[in-house]
Image (tube, rainbow, N blue to C red; front, top):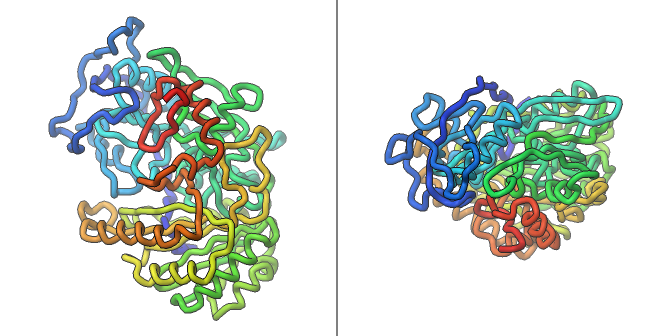
Length: 513
């Protein structure tokens, strides 16, 4: 079953390449900083080339060597290896390391420090501002760390950081187990979880990060080294707290995650479609006043396009009749087309994925939360902007929060602060043809202006932002993402990354900065 979605989804998985060993590669620049302040240049055009090592002055230890599957400019698979999900952003890294084991990550981090090479961390390639890639630096990619160890009796799952959400849902679903994930299967499980993570099971199971009970993470060690440490409620509990909502590329490189999992035998999945925007005010207002307070097993999303309104719902351990009854107030408005499927969560989840190749190449989003129902004026803003959307793929997406398991922080707490929101929302613009260079150039300024104006028009009705959907250029972005947790996060950053090795455009600075 294929559903229209704000970011259509990938159903295929990455293949694991053979290990390799390459000599050091040298590039200037401070660790973690942009390695090239000038415009990006494609491979082969004034680019650094592989050569001998030139360790940082003062470093007299044995030089680190890159291990794993190494991709460099000039290699046949470099163009695909350097490409992210959002083709609006292009970067040309000096080297990409696809880790095959934790040791490869340790080696890559040590190598980048010893050679003063800027680094970025990557898993699912869905960094929505392209921040998991870097010009003239090293990309440490964990997407091929795909191990899975499920203990049904203990109800725990330890997985490699390379699993995407579809792979995780499928593996757990085969054992009738689940954790919260987002709806898009190609998104990296690690990245989604470390930023908070929400989806259809949020009101039932809490945030994705709430189920995170342990992790292996590679951190900087000393002035030029790296090491792997185990993090849980007994060891480095402060870092576990930070990883639960602020862990994406801020403190180290997560290589595995351990979750507390929950039995889930079956779900009922409902989709309702209203043609046109004529019923928008009634549908949206009824949804926001009922769905967030319904049975906690019910997770809902509303997606508004130029030509239609979509309602998606998942009822955990529920029937088709139950989900229809719970959503009766919304479904009674107008004449929606309604379908319901029941089955195992893994099967249902896989059924609504759509190949990435079928979606636009370029995307722009703006994230926000709200604690009070949108008044009529706010809904009219949505209606006006959606009627004037640059493409049909552009949309206004919402996720119900309200009452539910997400209101209760996990044991040990978490850095995610938006637990009492009524709902999350984001306007999103999609344009351009995937795989066709420059196909969306004419629409780029139009789409970007539309997002900027749309988000500004909604500012009186929303607050905060979601770090997994970063708002570029936003003032007070630290507070918007993490609220009152910012100072504690900066202290933890200073403890585990005092040299600020892990930095990017909106990374957490250490308390000493």
